[in-house]
Length: 504
Image (tube, rainbow, N blue to C red):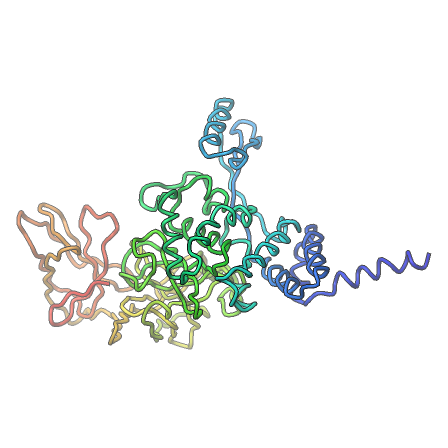
């Protein structure tokens, strides 16, 4: 009887014998805690202290991760439709089955949802991931990785917010031929084998197709089934492929280009000397030697939490939507582009926020790409790419507001673009191949930035006209020329006192 009374207390004390940060996540897991603890128990019984450390690494960082997925419902009854594309041998069969399902209902509606890893991951999934990751660590490309490098580049079971799927064994078997073919080759050479494989079966839909269902990222098995996706899907795919064959891999992200519109995802691995080896499997060169344009920031998406992430100290409501609300990214811009710290003066306002945001002009709007702590009437944005214009802004009640004047961070000099509305001038804007070709009988409006885009003047072109002349333009102004046929791709520019036009 004494033994029966004592046993629960013994189990309780053992179940809480975890590092404090791990215990904190286990408590958050609630009903799913036993699943995570079964994985921990398995690691303890394995008599391999590194496996226990690996499980702890995954669990202590698990609470920030989640999947975004969707299901179909009947628009009339709201009933969830029993359908999973992965239950079919190939995509064609899955599409055919779905077409048959659609005939039974008047209309089907996709319902998006998210689920947290700590609420849904099963012990079997976690254990298999660790087992297979340790097998990959023994393969030649990964043999020299430290345990910390293993945790960052090989161990994680996910890459982004894709639906969780058992991918390790499937990818290992499917792509083992690549590792066999690249045996004895340097990692840079091995990337050519991964690229050659990619080109034989996967279609890049970046500028040709938009996914209609509410599924931001494809799961690893969906990537194999659908055989197509955009640049973020491709980058995820290559992480899965490389890790399955023992190659360290990470996801790299440019949230916004600083001197054009759009964003980008690509990858990096390590060479034999553990030097950074960035690559884009969808490009002819594969290895990235340099970018053709300025990146606002280059981020490495990690599985682990980063102590210097803004969201560690700021509430989400005070952070613009996007990557800055997350905790798992590293700023690696200086690995890819010349950078500099940029100090800016701020406009004096009441109730000044604690943080200002560095914004770049992308998709015809100012987009937040980094932050800096406000120091009385100034801010310093650290590690910003050279060759771009940055506008400091505040984020208040869900909106961005100008906090100062834009600054052009050149490769040699820095220039605050505060328009001089007292001393004005006449500017001539000439045609420039690849940048500006004037169309006859079209209206062109010239704007300059002064806390918003202000109209300076407009002109209608005549046949054969190759330049525009505008009077009373403020000196030292950031300008933008908008034609009536604009598709939102125009770039801001400045015109120096010598008449040179510089695009940003």
